[in-house]
Every structure is written in C-alpha cells, then in structure tokens.
Length: 227
Image (cartoon, rainbow, N blue to C red; front, side, top):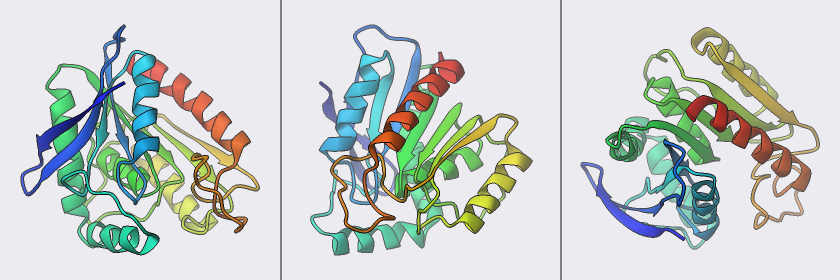
C-alpha cells in the first residue's frame, strides 16, 4: 500500500499518492485520474503497478487532493482545466519533475481527462511512454513536439471521442510519434476500464473484456518501453 504525498506545482499545493515497489524495475509511472479526481480506484491502480516494480505517483491535478462528490462538481472543475490547458500541463509536469529527479525513465497513463493530460504531456515531448484510456483527443494551443511511444485504448462508441476525432488523433500520432499503436474496442464507449462505472447508457461504462485486454496490452507496452 502507498501513502499520500504532498508536492508543489507552483500555483497550488498538490496531494498525490505514492506507491513504491518492493522489487524496483528501475522505471517510474504517473497515473492520472478521470475527471472526478484521484480516488480510491485510481490509487488501487498505483498499488497494482507498484507490485509490478514501478515507482508510482498518482497525480493530483486539481490541488489539495480535491475530489468531486457529484457529476456536476466534476464537470465544473474539469471545465476550468479544459479552458487552461497550460495550467493542466504545468500541474502534471510538476509530478513528472518529481519522478524524473530520481533518474528513472518515466511513463504515464491516464483515464478520461487524465488521458487527455497524458497526451498533452506527450505532445510537449517530456515522457518516455504514454498510455491513454478512453481519453479526449482535442489538441492544446501549442505545437506538438516529437512524441514518445504512445498506446491509445479507445472505445469505438465513445461519444466524447468520436471516430472523426479519433482519426485526427491518429494523424497527429503518425506525424509526430515514431512508435504508436491503438487498440479499438467495439461495443465499447467511455469509461470502460473502471468496474465502478456502471451505466444503462450503452456508450458509457465498464466493459470487462475491453478493460482486460487494455490492461494486458498496457503492461506489455510499459515493460517494453520503460524497463
């Protein structure tokens, strides 16, 4: 089990979650939550990857460890960062700097808004590997740099990342990343990795087979690129 960790992001005090491995593999990993903030489920994923040997930091991008108690709260908080992508990047790169200072390769994976934040970090050229789970693909207001190896895990029915937007994302990857690949899952929409996301709406919620395949691919990808 990990522990909560305070760190500074310039404009705000952040409260992340640090999970250290018993048998280190020499690599570090950032885990970026969905739009409700760093919750128990995301922290359990930090523990999961620490058990695989990674030095893991669950990233707080809102500040003070804030998490939403309702969809409305989460949407309002997300809107602030959607409107200021530089602020989002500054806050996530504070976590990256903390882990980079240990002299390790650093990868990142993220969900939903966290997936967008991971792709923004990749666009800035500062990661060694990036994984986006049901992320959002619109570009930030800066030029894309040479991107690291990238894995997208994408639900084809995701209403927040349409086939057209997915196409634009793959064109960007082809132009800027020398090593990228995508897993597209049919009959799968948004938030498909989290068992706690149960929805009667077909294009939203957990899909066990898609989640299982995503995790297997992610573990293999990170092992290849970081260790």
